[in-house]
Image 1 (cartoon, rainbow, N blue to C red):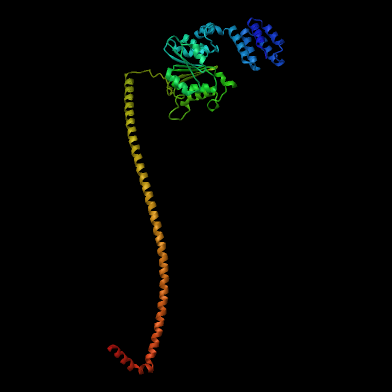
Image 2 (image 1 turned 120 degrees about the horizontal axis):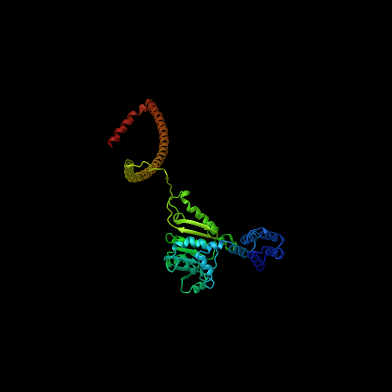
Length: 440
């Protein structure tokens, strides 16, 4: 790839109108291969003024994967050799930046300045509270002081103690990690609530997302939260894991859905603050701006119906009557709501009683079931005893039958004896024995 020295020579040739010289430098360079030489050479000879040629060369370098600083230099030349710088010359932020030769260091993408002016103009001359994340050597705070005025209270956050030393006593600088929500809340409690937060910190995904999620809800009403260098969402070097592995730009896309939640969400209560307190979401090249404000529930109306035609006193009286009727209807509706609430309360009480009675009935059924089960057990026992008694009865009957048979047999024997001669002969002797027995 072209070296910085070679690239400087090519861009100088373009800026001075000697594009052919630039094309010769590229054609003769041994720092690039033939394919790269063809791409870059074509970009220079395709026509156009110096600004167009420089921009086209930057685009060509980008297409072949050149280092970013080489592309950056091409676009700088395109800007300053064209008309764009004239449009920006009246911007007070850009004017301060370009005049800041001996002041505190400032490193900014030039297209940021119109974005700053658009969103911070409303705070100029007011006693606003501003937090800048990423102080470096204090140049950003000085730029904001110049633009906003002496009434603004400026506070910085940085992880490097030298940032606090660089600003001296001009602005307070808190030292801490912008990805630490507790630290950010402490800064807000100590110096806020902030009207403006500018995130120019570490630019990693976790830092950008953690900072906005902690600080945006703490912004004052109508506050502005501005995130710089969002292009790091596309740079692997900054792709540390944010929540769910999101890049910051992906996180912003979710906030676009939140901004339109009234049109797709069925949740009864929308989620604070992204669905209820984001007034606007502004996405630029490398910059995202969130403005805070109560998100009024959207509704549509119809106008232009020419209702003013033939509007007389009778029509006005009719409108008043309609309004009075509406008020009565609203009052009745409110009364109906009260009655409905009372009915619901009574219904809830009736349901509770019914449930209690149902539970009691279930308990009674269970108790009856247990009693029936016990009675069945007793019946089974009685049946067994009855069977045993019947068996004993049958035995007794058999014994009785046998005894009766035996008695009948004995009685027959006795009758035969009484009919015998011996019985009759011994009759006087038995009578005498009976008498003697009685006397004794």
